[in-house]
Image 1 (cartoon, one colour):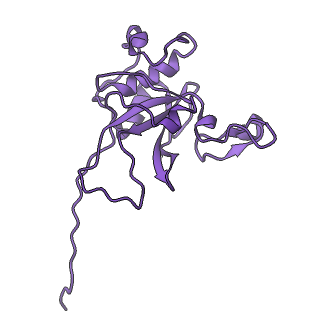
Image 2 (cartoon, helix red, strand yellow):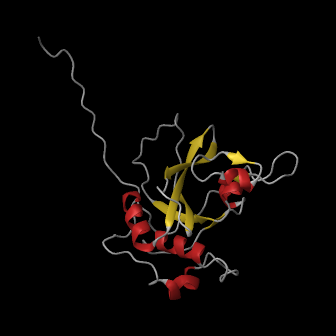
Image 3 (cartoon, one colour):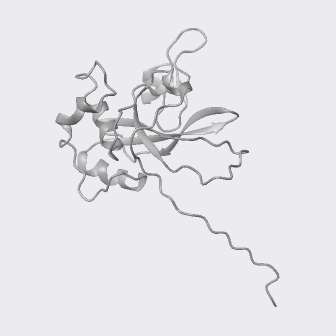
Length: 193
């Protein structure tokens, strides 16, 4: 017996980590479903979570990082490095008693669709939905000869229903979106069941 063929493939491992400010794609920005804090450090995860926690206090200019500076030490980041990677989110959730879901945009048929990439194991009283945005989006059928971009940025999703474009049904009724499966329900009561 002998080996007739052996193929080895090597890929550069580059874990998903947030960094400094990246503007939202215009299709997403126009929905006004996210707060994109303009930070120029590598702590976008922190600023995105703080923008959610203090949304009721900061109504004017919520994308300005200066609005959240006074709250910068209220979250615990023990043994978590910045930029925060997806694998560190469960540790952050335990340290802060906050649940986090993270969605990312995938280009499908020339449209950007939000898809879950981290779902919390248990939704807590304080729950935050975040969106990871990239500098460039490649479709499944697009090939780029350059080194792909690995810069990501976390933003707070303040209205998941609007973000996934199912906020209102054809007859004008609000749709309620499940954070986990992205399916919608006609009433909040059915969503909770």
